[in-house]
Image (tube, rainbow, N blue to C red; front, top):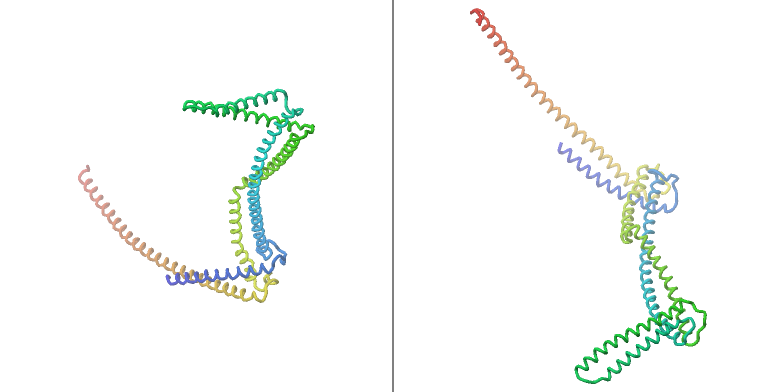
Length: 375
C-alpha cells in the first residue's frame, strides 16, 4: 500500500511539472496569437469562453491599464501645475508687496506735492493746518537737537544732553512718521476720488504714475486671485480622493494587478486552439509555425491524462486494500463477538442451573416447615 502511495505522489509531481510547462507554453503561444490579431475583429462572438470572448476580456484589461495610465498622467500634470502655481503665486505676492510699498511712497510724494501747490480737492484747511503744525514740531525738535549738539560740559552735562537728545529724537521720528502718513493719506484719497483735473509739473507726473501703479496692482490682484482659485480647485480635487502620491501609487498597483491577469488570458486563448485541435475557431489565425507548440501541448495533455488514469487506478487499488483490511477487521470482530456470545451462553446456563438448584432447595425447606407444624 505504501508503494502505491509513493507511486501516486510521483505521478502527481510529474503532472504538476507537465501542467506548469504546458501552461507556460500556451501562455507564450496565446500572447503571440493575440499580438498577431492586433486590432482586428476576426471572431463574431464576444462573450463566454470563446475566442471572441477571451479577446474581449484581453482588450478590457488593456483599457483598464490605459485608463489608469491616463489618471496617472492627469495627476502628474496636476502636481506639476500645482508646483507652477505655487511659484507664480509666490512671485506675484512678492511683486504685489513690492508695488504696494512703492505706491505708498508715490502717495507720500503725491500728497506732499498736492499740498505744496494747494491742488483743488486734494485737502481741506484742517489738513493744511495739521501739516503746518507737524512741520513746526519737526523744526522745533531739529533745533533742539542742534542746540544740544553744541553744548559742552562735564559728565553731568553730557548725561543730561544724552537724555534730552533721546527724547527729541523720539519725538522727531514720531512727527515725521505722522507727517508721512498724512501725505500718504492725502495722495491715496486724491487718487481714489478719480479727479478729472489735469495737474501740471511734478504733481501731474506723480498723479499719472500713481494711477498706473494702482492699475497694475488691480490687474495683479485679479491675476493672483485667479491663480489661487485654480490652486484651490486642484487642491479640492486632491482632497476628494486622497493625496496625489497615494492615488498614483494606487493606480500603479492596479496596473500591476491587471498585468498579472494577462498570462491567464493568453493561456485561455491558446487553450481553445489546443483543446479543440483542427476544429478550433482559432484555425484562421494559426500558422504552420504554431503547430510544434500545439503538438507539444497535446503531448503534455495526453501524458497528464494518462497519469491521472494511473492515479485513479492506484487510488482504487488502495481503496480495495482498505476495504479488504476492513473486512478482515470486521471478521475478527465477529469472531470475537461470537466467542463472547458462547461464553455468555455458558454463563447463562450456569445461572439457570443455579436458579433451579435454589428453587429446589426452597421447596425442600417449605416441606420441612409444613411437616413440622408450620412457623
